[in-house]
Length: 140
Image 1 (cartoon, rainbow, N blue to C red):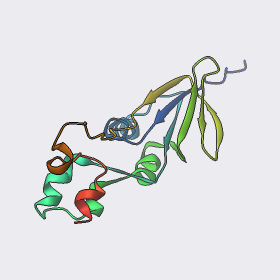
Image 2: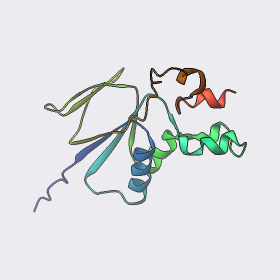
Image 3: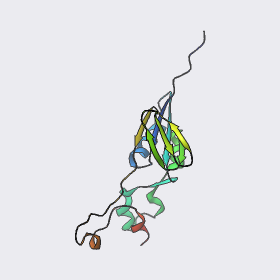
Image 4: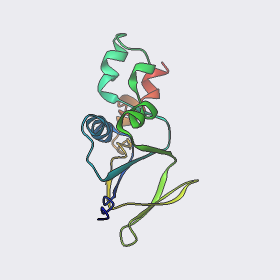
């Protein structure tokens, strides 16, 4: 009797933010059979802003603020695609990634992080500082 091949489902994680890093970590500890994970992020690391206060206080180095997505993907058994997601087609169930073309998915999750936009309030730009990018803190 011929055994059926396991059904493969593609989970695509767009962005290497905190939540997707946790998903990848948990996936590595307890993967789901018949599912394949792809993590898409423009760079091989992602900043972890939760450690920023400790960095400013001198407890952590700049490198400690970065999540190593290469190492994390390897642990999770996931494919890491380095590039920016530029389009999502929910009908065709594809994500277009700069330099990589289209990547198919059954389930996609978007976690691209925050993009600080300073409000147009008098004095805010003089005294307010956005949370990201982290380099405005770490380069000082």
